[in-house]
Length: 143
Image (cartoon, helix red, strand yellow):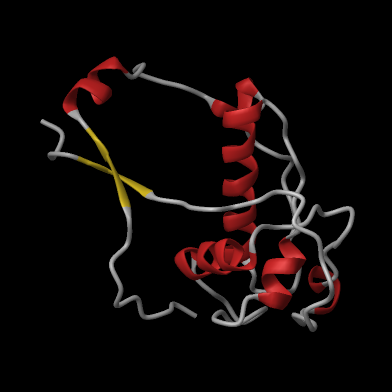
């Protein structure tokens, strides 16, 4: 369920110098910056899994700690997406930012994968605070 996005999306600019300084290849899985594979089961929640895993990786890149965060919180609590009927990354990130953060999976575990229903939002903590996000785009097309 793709959401219409009429507002401006913040972007972080990647310059030619930044691109030139980047290695030709980099595998984040060998660096520990990816969490274990999760299973959305019979719930169409890949959008929430993608958003959660992106936040986990961002935390790792900043703090060298890999939190395992709650996909269920995003599935159940995001008012702008469709729970097990699909959603979109920008609105998932908007939800997490507006809610003040995201809980850990151990505190708010995924149940939607078993039953294929999103469930109702439960009381949750904000173990990881999210205050802002941006999409990275190239400053000019690669040559």
